[in-house]
Amino acid sequence: MAHLLMVESWVGSMSRLLPRAIREGGHEFSFLTRDLHHYLRSAPEGAAHPLLGARNVLTADTNDTDALLPQIERLHQVLHFDGVITSCDYYLPTVARIAGHLGLPGSSPEAVENACRKDATRRVLADAGVPGPRFAVHVEWADLARAAREIGYPLVVKPVDLCAGMYVRRVDDEEQLAAAVRVLADFPVNARGQRRHPAVLIEELLDGPEVSVETVSHAGAVHVVGVTDKSIGGAPAFIETGHMFPAALPTDDAEAAEQTALAALKALGLTEGVVAHTEIKLTSAGPRVVEVNPRPAGNRITELVRHVTGIDLAAAFVEVSLGREPDLRGGDTGLRSAAIGFLVPTASGTLAQLDGRELRDAPDVLEVQLAEPGKQVTAAGSNNEYLGHVMAGDAEGLGARGRVEAVLDELASGLVIR
Image 1: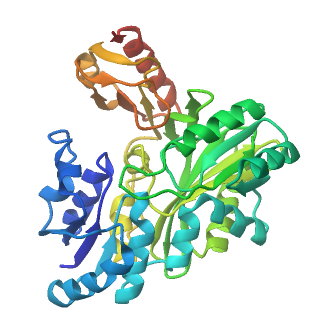
Image 2 (image 1 turned 30 degrees about the horizontal axis):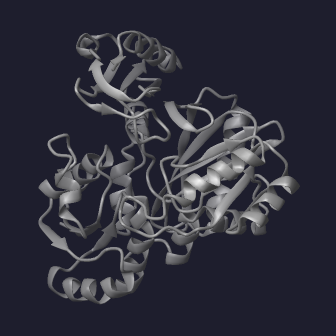
């Protein structure tokens, strides 16, 4: 039985999937957090899962890595960790530094840090010749305005160190750019109490559909599990409204996306101890890297993969974090495709009506999770404001997305927000 140190966690799907994978793998974990109440506040909707499954619950300032390392070293002498892991983007660099400090498996801290910082990713990939959008990174407004004119509108504005699509916006002129920069400047500290970097990343707006390539890296080799599609809504924001695995793509497009993702992972040095989710735009000029995420995909994409292939990416994440070769053989699950769609609120208020109980027993439906009436609703500006999701499968082909979209249309027709 191996013993993992889990440093913080998301409070959504992966807060359940990762502890489950650890337990089903015959392992155990200790959970380390700076704020126990962050996980208890959202209970009983699953947010406390990483606490409930833990052998130990430990507290320390996980935002101060320099002070944390000697504390972890002392804990390691007593508890004997075999690996370090997290599902939360904001602590991936911390985990990499802990693993490096203790001599445990994992990617290099530099590789993880470069992948987690969007501006660093752009520079590393550009230096390696991996295709991406034209971009600029600046702190001062005058520099941003000048760079925007040089690249040309429309543009995408991004924070360099947030996730879930937070504050990512399309801008069509300098007035919209200024407004987006002001809003971002008004959010100096993230949800985990970490002070944000003031730099702003601007990129040319890429055309074409977006997909993601799911991979597992171990012992210097990267295994491609497959390609997932993505639908986007909520303009000028970029809100993920749904996914299907596998993506309905011509073979050449799927292979081009895979090769581009592999080139990005190699350039960043993410070929050891990581499950990655690399987002690619299939533009008219060829594939372009959007982002490289050195952790399993969110939005239950890992479950889409499992339903279709039998491969458990959360379990693979556990094994590579322990320095072990993961089982990626999969098997026949009876499904050819699986899709998820999210109910995205377009208005703020109180959820008065949303009923999908009868859908749980509907043909092809794999999951239904919906908010309860009485919930306070905010019009979505990122992937953090969903009112729920529906997942469906197709045993015959690539029809899962169509099934999910039909169900979501039915749900939306009965949605009432007051």
